[in-house]
Image (cartoon, rainbow, N blue to C red; front, side):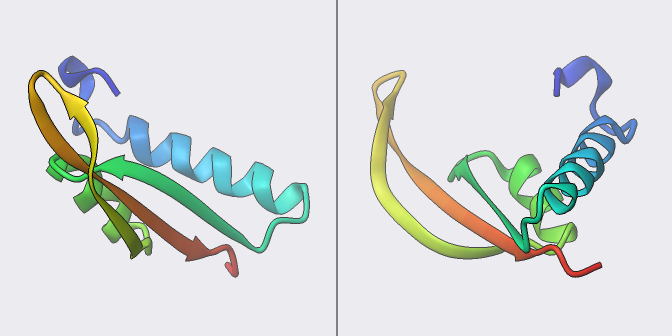
Length: 78
């Protein structure tokens, strides 16, 4: 979500729509990947029930620095 509109519930609404569609299609869990240094996104996902399920250290070279790829997942039971 663009920084100019963060904090207005846009990301949470998008996640809610994704959960609903995933359930409609029969999914029982959802996974995602997020850059390790993206603290705002990681906090949002944790608040939505996602837990870290794995980390690929230094997976991506971005702007001259290696960053982790964090894998997160959560059940869709509810």
